[in-house]
Length: 109
Length: 114
Image (tube, rainbow over all chains, first blue to last red):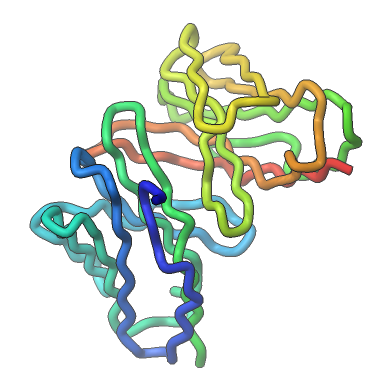
């Protein structure tokens, strides 16, 4: 079993829709959680950190469920520019950070 | 100017050749990483370094070596390239910000081994 698992997608949704995807992690000692965004043929960039209480940044909301060991990302009112691959990242110690394989999102006009 | 730079951006080489990929950063971070990315496999860690005298193997270090020449420079070498090392290679720096370590990636090097 992979340490961090994501549905690879692609998720294909119309502009303006709300879309959500999850990421599960296997190490219950994991301490830090992030979502990164990667555009085609570009480098990954931090989208947002994920806090236990949940956090929101504009149209993006991230949640952490420690009991079930998953994190989620919700995108409201999706834009064409949201089309990208979203990487789930889990840190379990000072030297171990694991990237998920990513979920592809495609927003259609 | 980009904070993390990689050279070359693209490289084609032949099996058996030695090749070096270079990474420089102006962020002042102590932590630096080399990853490779293959379709469907995500990012896999090759080597990482927490300061100039520190080198650590990642999950897929076989066939690679690294050198941390200075805080700002971390180079990756393929001693004898083979076709299954064809991939997209990323260098990254890391710093603790808030709840955990944030990583900042360079633009990547596309390597094709024939």
